[in-house]
Image 1 (cartoon, rainbow over the protein chains, first blue to last red):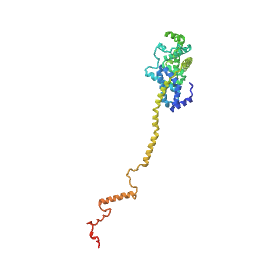
Image 2: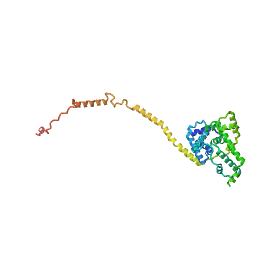
Image 3: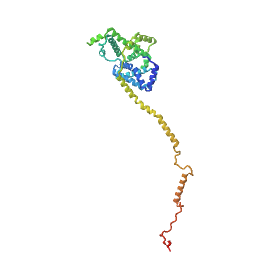
Amino acid sequence: MKHDATAEAALVSACRRRDDAAFGRLIDLYQARIYGFVKRMVHDAEDAQDLTQEVFIRAYQGLDRFDGRSSLRTWLFRIATNLCIDRSRRLNHTLEVVSGGEEEAWDNTPDHRWDPETAALSAEMHDVVEHALAQMSDKMRMVLLLHDREDMAYEEIAATMSLPVGTVKSRLFLARESLQKTLKQYMGTQGFSRESRLARKD
Amino acid sequence: MNQDWREKIEQEAELTLAEAVVLDEEIERLEPMRHALQALPSDELSLQWRSQLNQRLAAEAKPVAPRRNVFALWPVAVSGLAACALAVALFAPRGGSAPTASTENSVEARLVRSHQEFQNARDLGVAAPTTPVAAPPSSGGFDWSTLEKGS
């Protein structure tokens, strides 16, 4: 998303005046991205929807405290990041590798038998990527999503997560390497191909 | 990329300049992974979700209004207090003594003085305020002798 600083400042200013229409535009701009990020962090669509609502509620409550030093996007993702971490702590599991067997995960993937071949392959590739993301530690996944999915700069991610830039780079490298490993496995062995999946289901 | 470098990356340790350059190169080499993530379909939320959010936001907005009204009343309250203080300063009696006639020759002062003198005189019985009225002649009845009889 291209950021127009002037338009963003005007939007924030209108939101601070409790202009409901302006806050509605803010939600329109960011709801899908925040939801996509949160969903991949919590692995539960319903929880992700609740948390995404909570992000905007917190933003509404805290608009007066938003000083504009960071971008609106950074601020919103920081709220989302903190909520994901809080939820993880509440559920008493660390921000580490998600549990759950590989077989179970693949059995839950959507069945694309009725799709054209290309769409099926594309959807299957998406499943592979999603699965690779789910297998990563939360720390790595968070950086990877913010950088490669949300196009955030290192400095922006560092501000969002309160980390040094060097740490952000280290985590990005490890995350990309992990994703590449999974994709290579998929491409090389065809272990997750449509045919083999169908055969396994039969 | 040696083992020492990798350990530092995994432990998120601080890198030397040369090691940081290698890290940048490695991240660049893995750039195609970005495309894999960007190709993921976007996540849409339902209208019902948005409706719920709007309701929650409306509920959040409600408590703000009364608080604002309370603060809006502060200038009115302060003005009222100032007006009261001014009125007290202007109209309140000074010294706290009972009201008295302003001058000795005023009508009120003379009335009071006259009343007090009358009271004193009556108490002492020295001077009747009015001359006693003479007793009327004995009323033995009508003197018919004086009545002129007809010749």
